[in-house]
Structure formats: C-alpha cells, structure tokens
Image: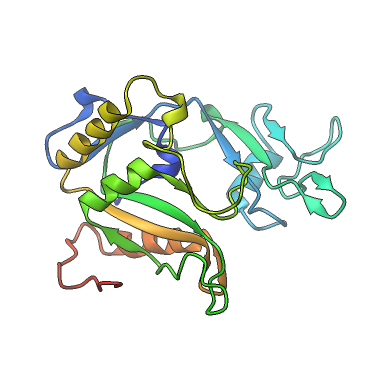
Length: 244
C-alpha cells in the first residue's frame, strides 16, 4: 500500500511526533482530528461523490451542513448549494464529518511514501498564458519541496480566501497564521524533517485546469493510481523529463 499525504489538507490534521519515527527514511504521521471540514463545491449533482452522498444522506449521527440549501426535518443534499445571489452558487459549501461517522478510519501511525503539494491553476492559452501549463504531476527534489512548503501559495479559484484570485503566498507551511514562535525556527524544523526522511517522495500536482482543459482534482487521483500501481519501486533518475 502506498500512503499519500497531501500537504495542503494535512498540515493541521497530522502530528509529526518524534516518538513515532522509526529512522527508516520515511516520515511517520498520525491523524489528530476528531472531525473533518469537507468542502463539497465540486459536488454539483447526484452521483458526483457516492461515498459522501451515502454518508450524508443516511448518517448514523447528526451532521452539520454549512451553505447547503435545506429546510428543517428535510434531507440535506450536498450538491444543493445555497446561492450568494440569484444564479451564483456559494463557492464554499461544507459538511463536518465526525471521525466516528466514517468507516474504516486509520487510527494507527503510518509511514508516508508520497507527500503531495497541490497548485490551483487557471486556464492557460497562448493569448492568456497565466501560470503556464503545469504537467499532470511533477517529482520535486527535496530542496524544492522545502521551498514550496515555506511559500505555501494559494492559487486560482480557491473558495477559502477572498482576494485577487492570483497566486499568493501564505508564508511558512500554510498554517503560519495559527502558529506561535519564530518563522525561522519553523522553517528549520521543516528542513530537518525533510533531511531525516529521504525515502519520502515529493510531488507537485495541478488542479482546476491544465492548459485549456478543466480537470478538477483528477490529476491527483491519476497520480495516486499510477504511483500505487508502481508499488514502492524507485523512480530512476533518467526517467523524469526536465520541464525546462
């Protein structure tokens, strides 16, 4: 089994505890959340996400829905988002799933094979080059992964923030507004963590668009499928293609 840890969504939901580490070159983590704050803006009709639909339509315990159109005593449907104004659906509908409402949750520490960074990319054409075309997924050298982790940019079409919509940096990690202490201390902790886990692979994966194609989060799913089918086989240095 290949364990993928998405750095954007896993920043504040995992504990990097020293006693978990085995000194085998891989990072070990354990989930620290009692519930998940799940965005469902990508669920727009019945059948888009069967797992979430089954979990939320017939839950074992009461759930909290945010920005979902419903009335008291009705069944809340996660694709029925409220509108900010007529014809404009809210970009940030959410549900809160308690940990005990999700079956087969992994509670034990796991070794991370792949740490995945995401980048939200707008449509890119010759006429409007925007970010440039980011390939299906990229393997990052550890030094680049460290720098990317420090910058932690927010990209195109992110419903969690209000701003210009262009790529902006959040600073150290992506949790910096919630952290205490010095930025340099945190940056050095990240660097030490990467140096001590050389067997963990880093990837960069676009979502939203590749070139003129709207892809949503499918590149991440395809990357996981590809790397899982490869097993833990080492990707030879001559196999990746330099994008420059």
